[in-house]
Length: 424
Ligand SMILES: *Cc1c(COP(=O)(O)O)cnc(C)c1O
Image (cartoon, rainbow, N blue to C red; front, side, top):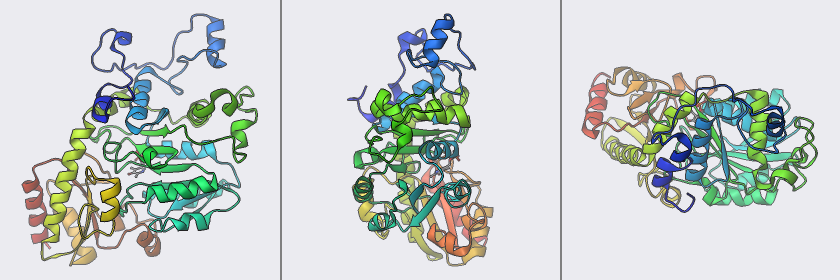
């Protein structure tokens, strides 16, 4: 599969029709567990002498197809799916880190991820230094002896900052720590972080990959490129007390992290994806390349239209010439810049609330990446737990409106915003 192109892999990778009774669509294996041939077979599965299905918290045939497909479209050697993007991020970090470890992260992150790193993980002794990611050298300057990961979003939500992934990857290489990239907003159809030096890619599948707003899901894709035997990750080289004394790196080599996510991350934290959600997300992934093209075209046209409206104070979209991230967008997102647009109305905070309340096609809700258009005022909703300085470093001003531009007819979307502006 690996030499086929992305749109082909999105439709076919991981699904062997002959192994599934000729079913053209991926079947839903709605089962919790799998019958062993006998006790020796069970023992072999538990000790990894043989690979196979044991229990759906660890793996499932439907989930497995989604995993192989995600690895194919991102260019990784393996992938693991989770109940949500948040479960993927939390399990991914807790599988790598222990008390006393440190992360360097972009300050422009999804609100939930920012809280995990700034409030919850410090309670477990894992600390984070947040840096302005627009200067890649800030990552190098924040590295400490105990730094064990860099964490960024390739296209920040909701700041829409495009990062210079290659420059940050150089610093992570020098620091000998894995470079983790949340690629949710860009999607693998527009950007493959592994090609630019990422070691680990994370997705909330809930957004563009699922695409229809029906199912939560998350994934970690392992590039297989990080050297876990560099002395900084003894849990990968020493016998694992948590798994029969397994020495991950010695036995599993490049696939060590993928297996640790399953054998310890899913086993101990339990954030498994339901097979029915895996099926729903597979339906989305199959059409991702055509949908994201339309999302990107609509978003660019709407951003240009907003720029031309007298009552609009500012517009942020990386595809606009006026965006300070336009040069990086040309390098990293040449096929399109995805569907998120932010803007401010001259009427400020109050106007933003009115617009979010009065649109009829754009639904007021806390999600992105649906085929249907969505709107939210982050300052009063998704980011309200943060103080004004934290909101500012996350790219949220009090007047900011975030649009997730859907694939409806663009003229209807313009008309909807125009009638909402008239209500101010
Ligand atoms: C939504 C989102 C998440 C969290 O994913 P859930 O599936 O909602 O748990 C993480 N990162 C980004 C960039 C997101 O947009």
